[in-house]
Image 1: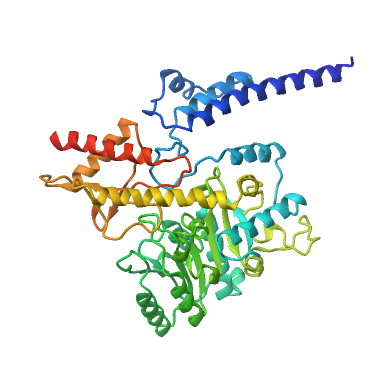
Image 2: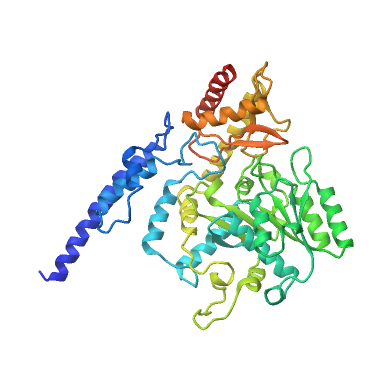
Length: 473
């Protein structure tokens, strides 16, 4: 056998071994997510030592490194676990993890046309547009997260309002409108685009914590009378604080009347538009100029997989396109680099494409419906328990702020802050706090297809148990 053939044989044997070890590791990981752990392990001295070592000059080998990587991740906080109720996380859908492995193995760059992968990305965007009722012919680009998607949308809105802004900048005072509880990424976008946070108009909310449309109109009229250009209205389709969905159809009427770009930040909540229960909340979504959806939130796939949907690439092309000698333009469709901030782009769409293809849209909708049901169960249980408080309005989506508030406790806010702190060390569940109208609340959020009613029951038991302990101290 020639020397080259021996080396290839040895390489093949090494690959088989590492893939076998990887199969064992991943099988354990997936099985571990099927049920909650009773506590979260702390970092072991061995891992702490490993993570303090200097740059290795000689390799440890693939299999030892794989084992060590698994230990590091297993001693980390993973949002895929069924009792992770904090923030708005991913569920690490298994077929999505497989897609990430394939994507990294092929390492395709979607900066320019990549044949089938580029067509697949466009198909996936259209599938998502159909799923949420935006448009079955939606155009879309996949980004690293909702922040980048929102920045991209507002950059397009800026170009639509000021066609020469790429060369001359924005020469006039502008205004961008969003609710008082819109996500901070929108302000970050405004700041990065050079529009200045002073251009943000924080519009008050109604009794259901949705943007007050009358206040929106008044703010627009005020700015117009002062020579300020209304650039965009950002409607929230599921606020991070309480899951409120702004009145999209009414906002669309306003944007149409005043000829203002309408962007829907549906990073968290937009997938619920594909359900029978929550679908009516999203009436008017189809009228938006752009929509952000994070598939790595409520479509369950691993991070990072955000999508900006539009009906027409033209505003994005006018915002980002350029003609360089090293970038071919051989197709009717624009290159991805001509419609987004990024040059080097991995195939982020594959995990959602494989998710829809494997499970079907109906199964996704059913999983979201299940989370909505858990939210209603949480609200009803807390409302009927004299030791708990809820907000006056029932949850619109899957975020349900609750407070442990037994009689005889003078400072409910301090009690709930201490409950949250104790939960972090307890390890049976993971919760985050929220400040709502100056009060401290606990904020369970359900975006995991693995979470069951039994897990919610554990949440209540743990909060009550720790609450009683803290109140007695």
